[in-house]
Length: 307
Ligand SMILES: *[C@@H]1O[C@H](CO)[C@@H](O)[C@H](O)[C@H]1NC(C)=O
Ligand SMILES: *[C@@H]1O[C@H](CO)[C@@H](O)[C@H](O)[C@H]1NC(C)=O
Ligand SMILES: *[C@@H]1O[C@H](CO)[C@@H](O)[C@H](O)[C@H]1NC(C)=O
Image (tube, rainbow, N blue to C red; front, side, top):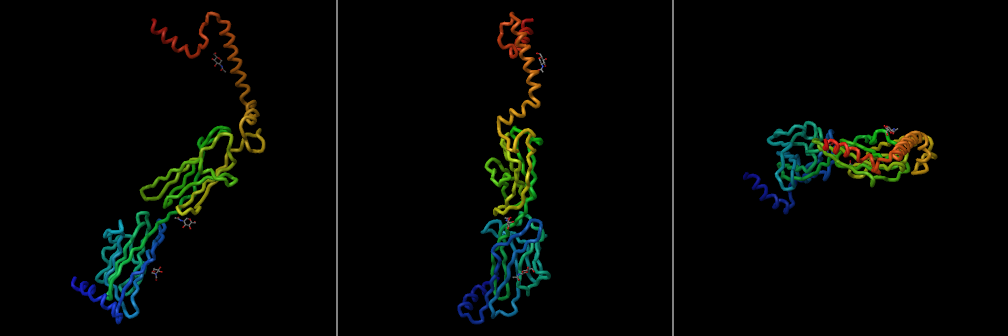
């Protein structure tokens, strides 16, 4: 590499003289955003000083860095007039790029979460060389959320849970809950984020509802990592029992109204059964034990032991 040694030696000298000096600069967009499953462009161009005419690119190396200091993996290379073992899915953004084209932008054809990170673009021209690091951020949009309840059929005045799910997003987002008056209920919920093999996130949030104090609608909204709302889904609670007034149902007065409907008959039967057995017990004067039901099984076992 004698020639590169000479370049390193004479380059500063030429710069100081500023006469007929050529300088080469790789200029990149500092941050590029790519979308999952689509093409991503990492934009870099080679700039030369005005006195360099007809610059020629001899070598380009696009490397994916795993840490700021490392050598990186070559994803696209060009040297001696031809492409150098390009990795599948990486190419020059300019169609039919050649060494005369100063736009050395990299195109990733089918962006994956794993493509996110820092890339180094190294360029050697016949008038000097330079390199630059640029970053790719990957984004994927979350699916429209789905909401279901546990239990599936909500029983009025009993506790229940609403479950909201959204998947296929990146980076990690959040799920928030609102009632129909836009008050936020996220504090009563718990969210879980799972990352699948392709790097995308599945978000699951569970909102606990106390029986007897629910709103008629709940909205689950998915927000992306930068806080933008991506989508939402509204869950309608089952209508309150017909006997309640005005749709807002609270505690005991409501229960008293509802209970007679189905429960009185059952209570009457149970109660009559109770008083009957009570009467039977009272009549049975030989029965000394005041609480017969729990003792019955033990008595049976003792009888077995005695035999
Ligand atoms: C470089 O080429 C790509 C693909 O043709 C294009 O989208 C981009 O705008 C170009 N950049 C510059 C600075 O010319
Ligand atoms: C979040 O959503 C907003 C608005 O839709 C969008 O502009 C932004 O790029 C998104 N950010 C991420 C990280 O997805
Ligand atoms: C009433 O009591 C008897 C025995 O004490 C029981 O077999 C029956 O199931 C009870 N009926 C109801 C409605 O609880």
